[in-house]
Length: 166
Ligand SMILES: [Zn+2]
Ligand SMILES: [Zn+2]
Image (cartoon, rainbow, N blue to C red; front, side, top):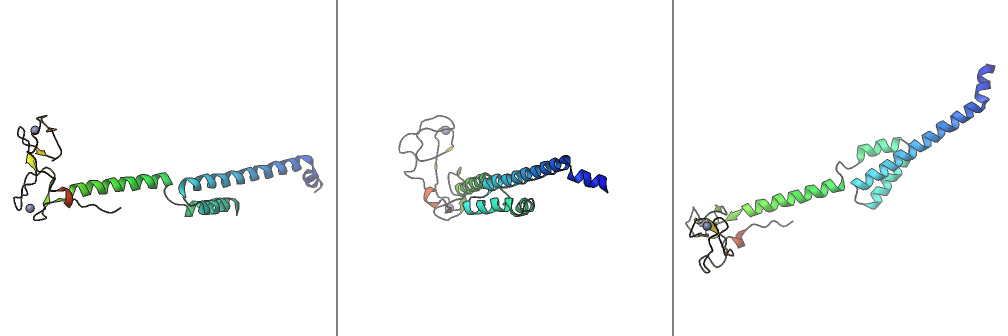
């Protein structure tokens, strides 16, 4: 086929081949760069990031696909966010987990007395009857000032708050 041979020898073919090769290389580097960027968002360990970057380069195009399968599901930021959320939730639960100092029955922060053993837990506001924290100098619910000495000297519930070690 003289025509085809002619075409394959022509400058047009050489140019097309070079252009195609150029685009393949650019695409290869772009995918590798994307892997590097994505790995840095998701992986903390610099060695693992370096390995992911290598995988992005070799084998070309296949490496990034493999990376997609093995990469961590969440970004570092998302993991930190979730950790903070969990800690806040735990703290809120710990706050709620109040127990009577005498009978260890579960009590609420708003209880004035323990419903199980009738131990006095908090003083009530003289005006509105709301439970007062020992350090309060004024009732936050009705703005009546709390006379000094009218609340228990220390919060009986405080030492019994369950603190989870984080
Ligand atoms: Zn009790
Ligand atoms: Zn009050």
